[in-house]
Image 1: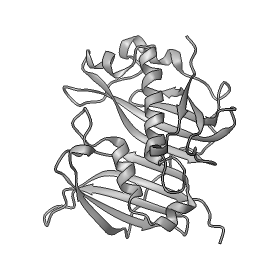
Image 2: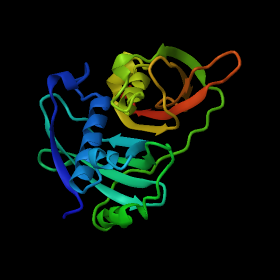
Image 3: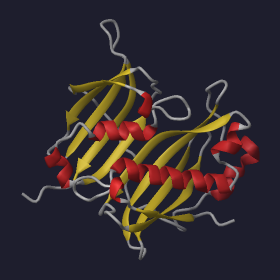
Length: 255
C-alpha cells in the first residue's frame, strides 16, 4: 500500500469568514479528517483501535499557510507519517490547490493511549510495530515549514473566560481539539483577522470537559505574533491546569 494519500476538499460558503478565506478551524478539521482516513485504510483508525481499548490523542498541531483556501475553491490535502517514536508519532500535511500548487503545510504530533488506564502506549512495539511500515522519509516527501516551537509565558494577561457547553464536546466526552482553535481565534479583532493568519500553532496539555471554566491569557510577542494560554477551573486556591498553549502569527500588515 502506498504511504501518502491525497484527499480532495471543497470550500463551501459556510466554511469561510468575512474575508472569504476558510476558517482555520474548518481547515484543521479537513487535516484531521485526512489523518483519520489515512490511518483507517491502514488498520490504525479509531474504530479498529477502540476494539482494543486504544485511541489517538492529538498533542501538537502547527499550520503555516502562504495562501488560505477561499470560497468555492477546490483544493487537496496530502498526508503521511514522518516518524514513529516510543510514545509519539509525527504526521505531516501538504495543502495544495486543484492544480497541485502549494498553499501551505502542517505538522502534527500524536500519542496513543489505553482508554481504560489513560496511559500512553509504546508505538514501536504495538501491533508488532506495524506503524513503522508507513513512515515516509524527507527524501520522499518534504514538509516545508518549521517544527513546533516552545512557549514561555511570563506576563500574560487574562482577556476572557467562558464555560464549556454542549457544542464544545465531542464523542470522547471532552472539548474537541478544534474548538480550542475557534475559541482562541475569537479573541482577536476584525482588523487582525483581516490581515490573515500566517501560522497557527497549538500544544494540547490536558483535557477539559462540559461545564469547565476556561480562562484565556494573551501575551504579545511583537506586532505580528501573539501567544495564548488556556487554563481551566481557576479558583482562589488554585491557578488551575494548563489545557493548551497556542501561537498566532498574523501576516505582516501592508500599512
